[in-house]
Picture 1 (cartoon, rainbow, N blue to C red):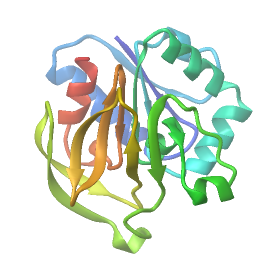
Picture 2 (cartoon, rainbow, N blue to C red):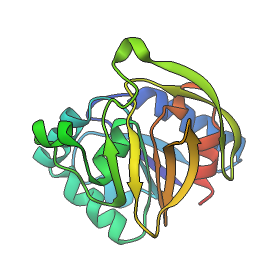
Picture 3 (cartoon, rainbow, N blue to C red):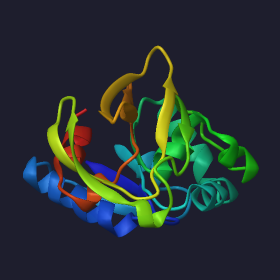
Length: 193
């Protein structure tokens, strides 16, 4: 199995390490690569769009034609996980901050997101969260978005204080938090799709 982590900005190394550990835990032979240029996405079995700064990630993947490869990968039912900023980039619709920054979205996940819904950096926090199919996890929220609404084909996997923070639509997993910073449970769930 080859897993690609979009490596233009954000928690790239943390996702690479968590994915390698998840593959080892599941006893799956594979490699994990950072994707910073075109030509690598088509050879992957799974993709991760990490947390970071959504406007920057969006600009770089569209400027470097990686976005087109991600869209093609999704059309072929490739599995994709987006965390925090990655969730925003995957979304079909954003809030006024997304519009104000002219952040281009991939539109692959039928959700509307709100950036920085829990506040700025100093309001970051960690909490226990019960995630469907995964169980209890430590969820770390850093300038995290929330999912304000979901389409009919989107399954809600977790909420925090009645706010949607994890969803699944077919082979796409969207998370408002950073699973790569706490354990490999979410990565293992994703790799087993």
